[in-house]
Amino acid sequence: MFYGDLLVANLVAKATGKPVEEVIMVRAKHKDWAAVAGQLRLTVSSLSTAARKAEEVSDLAMAGGARSRRQTGEQKIEDLGNLKTVNRPGG
Image 1 (tube, rainbow, N blue to C red):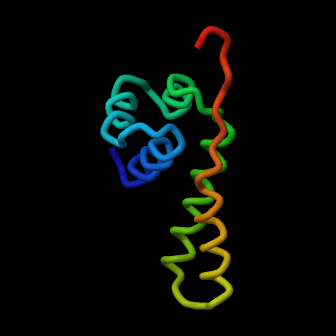
Image 2: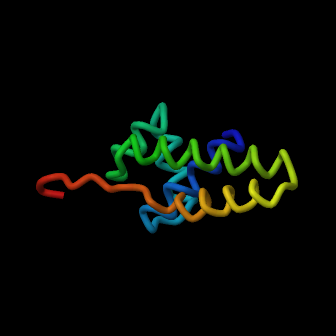
C-alpha cells in the first residue's frame, strides 16, 4: 500500500463511518479502489473527485507559502467529506 492508498482509505473511512482498518482490509480483497467503492456503496465519481482534491491539497502544501494557496487548500479540505453514497435496492 502506498501513501495515496492511505489517503483514499481515510477518505472512504470518513465517508462511510467505517474504521480505516476495515477499509484497508476491504481494499486488500479487491484489485482497485473502484471495486472498494462499489462494495462500500460509494460512487466512483465522488471518490475520484475527493482523491483529486486531496492530491491538490497535498501539492499546495508541498509548494509552500502564499496565503491564497492556503485558503484554496483549506476550501478543498472542507470539500473532501462530500463523498456520495449509492442507494441500492434491498441493501
